[in-house]
Image 1 (cartoon, one colour):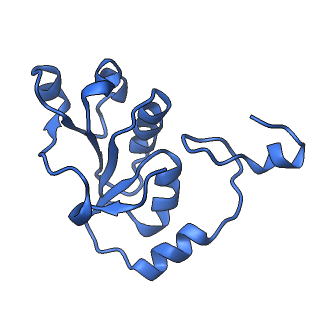
Image 2: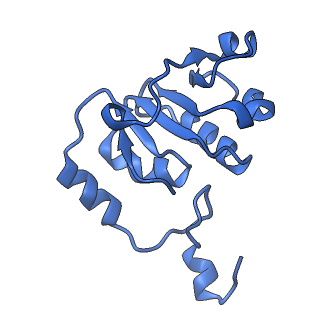
Length: 143
């Protein structure tokens, strides 16, 4: 997975257009998904996108996690940015769903983030990342 980036050092500077605007034009390479948007609408266009910004309007709204995973599992390789009410303890989970860029509304303490990212050595379920679930390791299953 790509290195962790924040908005101020993100790779893509083109403003993201709404999903409706993106689907209605042919030249945009950056799109913003609101929590009510269906990420599957982007699947036919993944090859021309360099940024998908997913809105997290409230920390308890988990629909953006699904959008990230849908896009990564469909083969999207561009920047996937979580924007909005992104809390430091959510970033490791967002990374597992494929997010590699973050634009939180509130500042993130780098030491707290580092501790959060290093907290667990193993994962318990498959996700959009390459981490192997611990149950597969325990039972000698691969793949």
